[in-house]
Length: 116
Image (cartoon, rainbow, N blue to C red; front, side, top):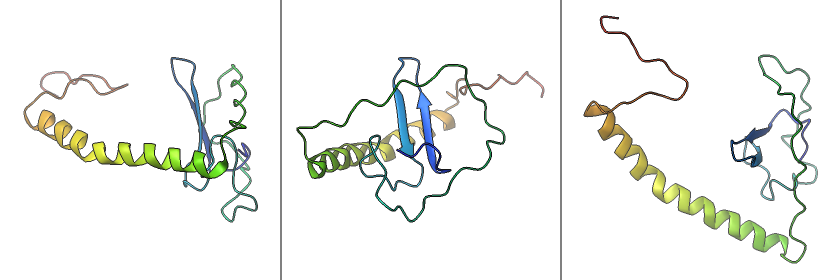
């Protein structure tokens, strides 16, 4: 992936796993590579409002050499279909929780004090 592109993002999870992706969804072989001559590539000029950690991301593991590009894309498409099939159900479940008063705390949020 072209990490200097303004559409590139990475997230590091508590497990240490790093997700690298194109926010526009234009890298069908992510996290390994961007398309040749990508029409949406734009070099990132500034990092305003970003917080940079002091740790260096682990290098991306090499693409599986024995799996053709088309098969990797099919696998990623199948995974995306699974997520997309479940998402509406999860959104509806969360909506019902919110309506019934089971809001709980939002990630990073603070509980409101009574009377505010």
